Image 1 (spheres, chains in turn cyan, green):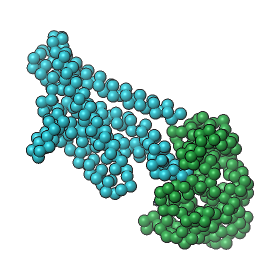
Image 2 (image 1 turned 90 degrees about the horizontal axis):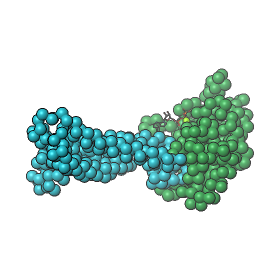
Image 3 (image 1 turned 90 degrees about the vertical axis):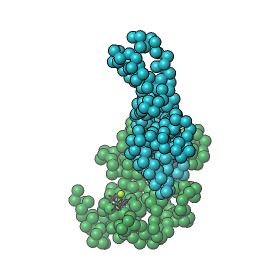
Image 4 (image 1 turned 30 degrees about the vertical axis):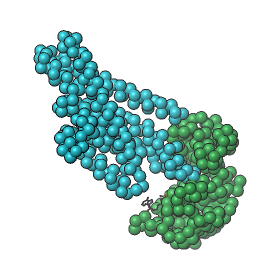
Length: 216
Length: 242
Ligand SMILES: Nc1ncnc2c1ncn2[C@@H]1O[C@H](COP(=O)(O)OP(=O)(O)OP(=O)(O)O)[C@@H](O)[C@H]1O
Ligand SMILES: [Mg+2]
């Protein structure tokens, strides 16, 4: 167990980097994905087209390719926020396309009759959205959104390849130094990821409960 | 109260409403009947502009139906609509379903809206369900709540699109009774239904539609006993056999 007692601080720092990647790219994904989802369901054809294009490009390109583009490509054309942010951009845009699809499926899960009934009692579009459609869509969006963030958590490990000293990077370092204890190191690091995912699931469940209670 | 002139509507190539001229006087109860796909729902939905029309005009209480925006929302508030599938707001209680419109659209005080809602729920016979969610109610109860929700807006006219056809037989009567009561109180009503009993007791007029046209209009008794057009004869022959 000396791998752990001697290195716990550096392992914690590694998970700190993992959480920073998750936080930054998650925030980018949530904001961007929501905007694109609104464009996707808007009545304006151009906006819908742009949103479809965005999702098609970023959902269908392998994440590794996107990171290569932002890591090597963007600095070439003068867009360089530092490697950490550039990598987060790739993860954020990639994940945003999944956020868009999760939110859109939430909208689609609310029966059309709900919005029609709202309009039929004289609610303008914005009010029928805020009073009737969004509160119901939100509850439907939470579970798929949690899956998206769980996937992102695991995807942050790709950053190890590019020298971000996050959890997986530290794990590889430990493998070299403590070759005989590989299996324990592996299990220990996996446990860290599992904890992060468990917290995301817990937050999602709490959200769902809260909104279920509000519905009464 | 409602006046449609030369209304045409297409769904792509399908000419769903053809040369519709249709008037409903204040306090009148009109039943719309006709085969599936003849355009009855579409007719109903154009009256509060849930469907747009391609040609012609629709007036409600002397006002041309506005295109979009605030004016349209204002007009819709005056036209109650009851759907085949109830469409109660699934995340709101029965009471909130009835008060949402008056509070958000009419700007009433919550306490006033709730008091009025309780009266209406009493009237349609579901007062003891006020704090439940729609999913906890039977279909017949849900539809009566939907009627109360529409009534809470104090509409000038009410549209019903097959309000009982999603209901089990034993629940149809309770909803029809509520509607007959409304008719007796002088509400202007346009009702798409195949319930001949309702047409005979409550309607002033039956309008028969087929293939997007109004083929025949008459008082209920005359229409059912002595239809003039072949299509109406054919249709009545079919539904009477069941
Ligand atoms: N949104 C739509 N897009 C395309 N076609 C439609 C749409 N809504 C209805 N239609 C078609 O228009 C025609 C008339 O439909 P409508 O629902 O008004 O008939 P209906 O008389 O109410 O029939 P039912 O008794 O089955 O309810 C049908 O052929 C239907 O398939
Ligand atoms: Mg219909």
